[in-house]
Structures are given as structure tokens and as C-alpha cells.
Amino acid sequence: MRTAVARTEPPSDGTRPRATRREDLLTMVFAAWLIGGLFVDGWAHNNDKPETFFTPWHALFYSGFVATASWMIWMVQRRRAAGATGWAGSVPVGYGLGLAGVATFATGGLFDMVWHLVFGIEVDLEALLSPSHMVLFAGGLLVTTSPLRSAWHDPSSRAPGFRVFLPALLSATLATATVAFFLMVFSPFLTGAMTDGPYRYAAHFVADRDLASWLVEEVQLEGYAAVLVTTLVLLGPALLLIRRWTVPFGTFAFLFGAVATMSAAIESFDFGPAFLAPLVGGLVGDGLYRRLRPSAARPWAVRAWAAVVPAVMWLAYFGLLATFRSVGWSVELWAGVTGMTGLAGFGLALCSTPPPVPAPVPSTA
Image (cartoon, rainbow, N blue to C red; front, side, top):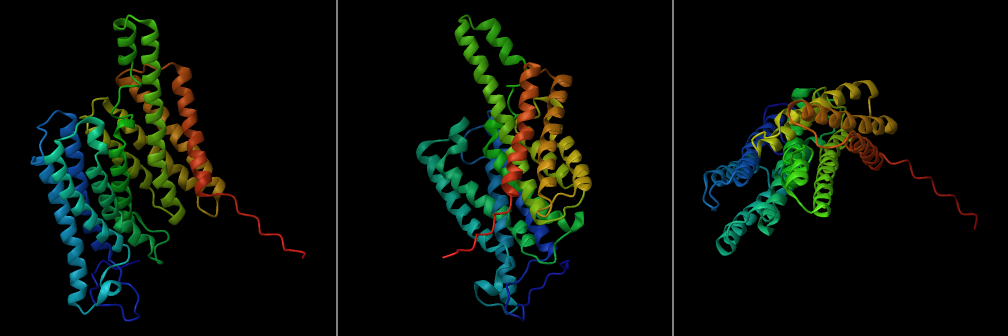
């Protein structure tokens, strides 16, 4: 276990320095400021707030970046002041790409300002896919995943307790939330595609029956895509953590619950408590994890875990939606989509824990 006391002196054996758990945790505090600003900006865009570059939410977002970048640069400068020299001696393990992310994000910020001044402020899907925002996305991911890389390369980190594992878990959670943000058009916590509203509208206000049928199918496809994409977004990082660590209880509840809550907040929780379904799935995942003990050495346990957890999560989602709002899908549709998420989880786990490759047959020549 790494000590929480910062060690700024260069390692005597010539190896790369390592960030302490406290340093990783502070990195995540500043990164949470950055990503929190991103979600506040998304909330502002989705709730018709003033569309200019100079806004309070942009200020929150970019000040979070300045704080995070300053902290990471200070970590390096502190080691150099203690006698470290060069990149290898002063940049902690896992933070090299993070500093590259700082440079990428800074470039993207300038690019974003110029882009908005020249082309104006984008809205809807254009705002997500703007080239300047893609640069910010890439830089932000590199920054927020620094503590995850730091913990990943720590040979003493195998079966950490929740407190020790928290910086890596926060890193994975914020990175996943960032991905979910840029895929918000496929979020079941932001779309009404599963409620009965769109279907009642098509039935009562669209006179052309063929057009109404087409609209219904398009909305159903939107909901289907939202459920499957969200399953992969949440399950992928979870399987990555399983492959590397024996994770503590609460890992999946925290990861799934936090990402869903942040996503639902963009639309001010318009669809009621359905966003709590991933928390339910995460709690079941934590319990099943303790029972099955999935790991790289137990690939079938990983696959079983990945098949059951999303199915439970989406059953909870449709149950909450039916209780507090409405479900516009037939039982065949919502049950079939739920079953498909289990198959998708199994397939993703199969890719992360593939069968061993047969040894080559010796040549007889």
C-alpha cells in the first residue's frame, strides 16, 4: 500500500516516481471540479440558457481545468525542486499522458473560443460533435484517467480496501461520466423514448398512419440504442477494473450510480427516479461479485457476472419507470431489450476474457 505522505525526492534506484494516494485523491478533487463544470455546461445548453462563450458555466468548466492543470504541474515542479531531473525523474507514473492531456485541453480551449467567435455557438448534436469539443474531450479523458493509470501500474495494488481504491475508482467514474456526457443523445435518462408520451402523440396527432407507424418505430429504435449504448458504457469500465483488481464492495454501485445521476441531472431529473436503476444494478453487481469472484483466472465467472448485472439493472429501470412515470413499450419489447443487454454484457466479457489461444503445433519439417 502506498503511503499518504508525499515523497518528493527522486527515487534512488532510477525508477519513475510514484504519486501518493493523497496526491491522486487531490488530482480527482480538481478533476471533479473540471467534469462537474462540463455537466453544468451541458445542463445550461439543454435548458436554454444564454448561448455565448463567456458564461458562468464556461467559467466553472475552465477554472476547473486551470486548477487541475496547476496541481499536476506543481506535482512535477515539487519533485524537480527536490532534485529530480528530466521527464523520467519528475513526472509520476501515470501522469505523463495526463500532462499531454493538459496541453491538449489547453489547445482545445483556445480552439473552442476561436471556433465560437467565427462560427457561433452550436446547439443540440452539433454542440457535442464540434471539432473543438472533440479536442477538449480527448484532453479531459487523458487528465482524469491519470490516477487510474497511477494505481494500475502500482505492483502493490492487488486487493485494496475502498478507501485506498477511491482515487482509482473516482478516476474511472469521472472518465466514464465524460464518455456518457458525449453520448447523451443515447442516454435512457435523458430521453422519453420508453415512456408513452411519443406513442400517444403519434396515435392522436399524426393523421397519416404510415407516418405515425414510422415515427413509432424511430422512437423505439432510439430507446433500444439508448439502453444498449448505456450498457456498454457502464459495463466496459467495470470489466476493466475486474481484470486488474479484486475490487472492494461498493465499487459498482458507486460507478454506475454516480454516472447515471450525473447524466440525469443534465435534464433536471425529468424522468423521475428511473436514474436509480444503475445503482440497483451496481448493488446487485457488488453482491454477485463477492459470490462469483470473477477475475482473469475465472473467465466464466466474469461472463456470468456481466450477463446478469445489466439484465437486473434494466429490469429495475423499467420497473421504476412504470411506477413513477409510464412505459410506452409492450412487454415483448422491454423484456426483449432487457434480455439483449444480458447478451451484450456476456459478449463484452467474452472479449475481455477470451479463450486461450492454442499453442502452435511443432513443425515436423
